[in-house]
View 1 (cartoon, rainbow, N blue to C red):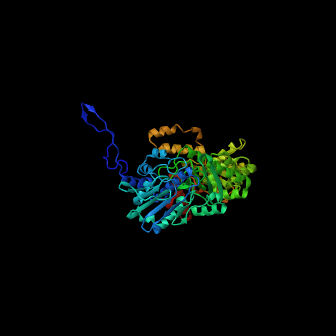
View 2: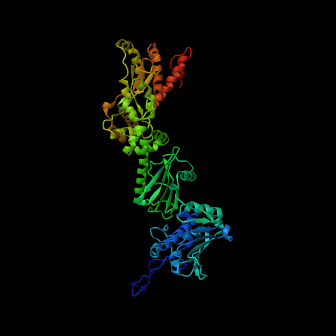
View 3: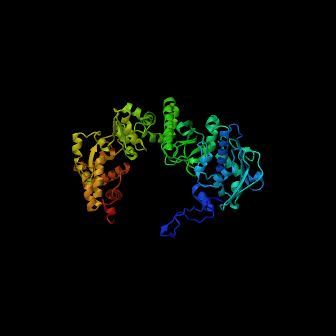
Length: 618
């Protein structure tokens, strides 16, 4: 029976009094094999399909052990599905080392004693198995496991294990060949897992790259060479079959420290940076995971890998990589190799680099956030949006000197045309990573000048009016200012291009922060209002400006309106339009002003109506 079977579930101390003394007797845990199988199926393994992998793994380990003693020994594994056996069972044969009767008891009927595997030579570095539970996984699909095995110079051993925890060893006729045959008798509800087509597919999935030939019902399912060693055509076919795409390019991977070789396949279409990349990982040429994550750095979401390693550690389920120092080192080295490919591509093939960036610029920019060499690639190659046309930052500097940028898309779209009309070149830093990368440019060269555009800076570039015109507009400006005073906005008139823009709402960034701070303090309780007031700076009370464009025909006509009421209505309407155009947040007072000015305009359009009557009853 399995260790401890039939013994009471106790461990620790048995107590009785003998001359006032406490005696201790060591007990053993009882093993409930059905409970362990349930634990494996629901919590360790993701699917019963792993039983095929574990059977092939044991067979390959046995062959490896035999070849260590006799390098010319035969090496093959073959599976016979119910289609061939004819009795509903699955048989797995190998030409490996085989087991003695003592080893059968130590290996097949012992759960978790990896130290004994070391003593017997079945947990050495070159073997796939590490946890001693491989055969146990077969109980996920079988009620009975039969093993017929023969070690060189020893009689054949017949062992049968049952899902209820019993096992028996029986004598039988000696088999001539050294090796092992495992037969699975399926459970009624698991017979589909032993179907011929499914067994063949699983054997090909897990064992395609094994170093020894594996056959299922006579069909070879292993490849002769690794995909990245079989030529570009075979690699393209593998990429299409594995990931469903023809790669933009391939990058050879090699990390000797981990015994890792393989290839990275560059996606031909954009990838979602937030989605985890799934890579196909083999461990000593047995498939470990179809969608392993965290093999590459987070920024390398534009690549999918197929790799084989000998030194990386698997988790207990052998379905993922164990996170340790070696895996972290591998991740860094693979990232460096992808980075080197990018640098070489930029140096050697400009057209191909541009095509790559058009698809995967987010990955490159993410890397450039931490890597100066990639920052240089972005600086030289990635065409950013500017109000002078798309161009790389390096070219922008050559043409315009200082890299002046707008930190968000709304601000850029509001000011781009106006800034260009004043001869001011501006980069749109509103896309992901762009503003941060622009700020990092001085790391490449300390002479690079970077300046974030402040909208209030534009007003200094607008033309002032001649004294006579300015004097004549003072009554209009005074009336407009009275309408804007409740909103804390200053009205100024300037002349600027383009003439089609009647007004701009400009505010200093620091003043905006201070205004929002004061507004928050007004609605907060006394305690928080006191805390917020400590951040307020009196000298920062610079009001935002509504800049009216004197070159705009509509503004010039507004300046001739006969009454202050008409001036208030039209200026309020321009104020609302400027807020909306600049995507500025609207306060309740702004919303009320927009509604009132809209209704007033309707009121003015109606005959025999006075301003304000249309909303007197609101």
